[in-house]
Length: 220
Image (cartoon, rainbow, N blue to C red; front, side):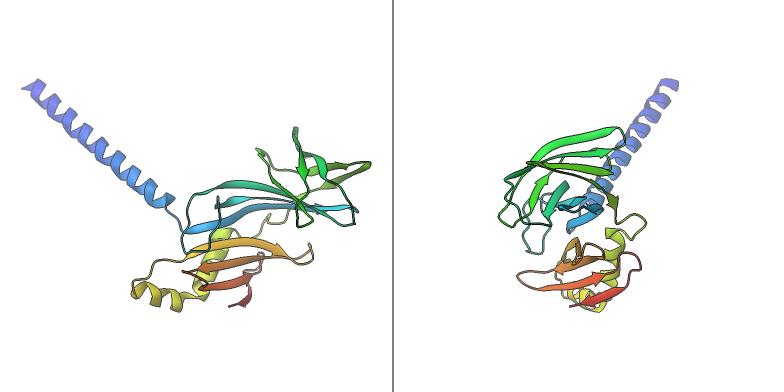
């Protein structure tokens, strides 16, 4: 009788653990499901006399398509070097430093005039040393989003701004819109979050949000 009781308890515990694991797995799937195709977690920036530099960390679609869906979203860390003076450099060697860690590589020129590449950083950068021919420049970097609102914060702000339209769409059975978040600047001194809620085709809502105050500067 005692053996049967122990066996029954074992079966019940095993079943409970299986149900818990299944529930946790389903919960994880729900949490991982997201319609955000691009977001920014950190944005390090700085400039000297020759170059302006940004290093952006976040998540984005491997190949961005504005189709209302977020597919194959993955972590990224992108370095952009923008020349402030005319040059003919084909490549720029660089060393990114942070604490006792560093990352060295070379970035090739692009057709748009900037030097852009993905970098595999496991640390927060504090400076970068650029070498192009005889030109050498070291630039300090700071996270312009330190203490600012997060991508999730401004997504909520944008959703609230278009709440009536979004709710009407959901009531009509339309799917939730794809969300695209990018930090932009016109003068490299003042930054704004650009938040776009993308439907099918060219259908989208967009808002420009102050990352420090949450104020919507403009919306469409």
